[in-house]
Amino acid sequence: MKKHRYSGFVHTRLESILRTLKIETLIITGVSTNFCVESTARDGFMLDYRIVLLKDACAAFSRKNTI
Image (cartoon, rainbow, N blue to C red; front, side, top):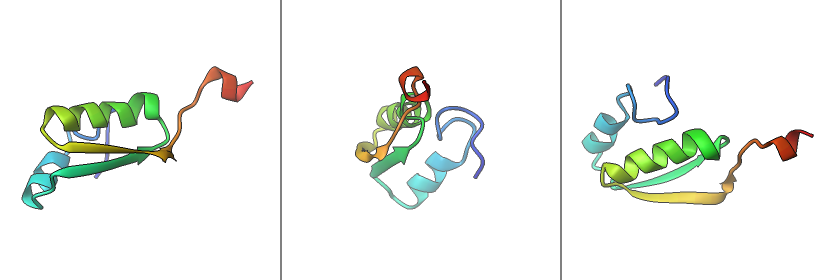
């Protein structure tokens, strides 16, 4: 599945797949925590999924990290 927006739910089949599989909890990880991970987590929450973010499996780019 290809993702074209920050959220994994926008213009994808993700919700359909999760509902078909009767998934209720999402464990979310990723690199762009302040963009993609956050957007997917918020959208998932708004769709009534239980959201778990793994602190040690998320990261974000910042100006501080690039200098």
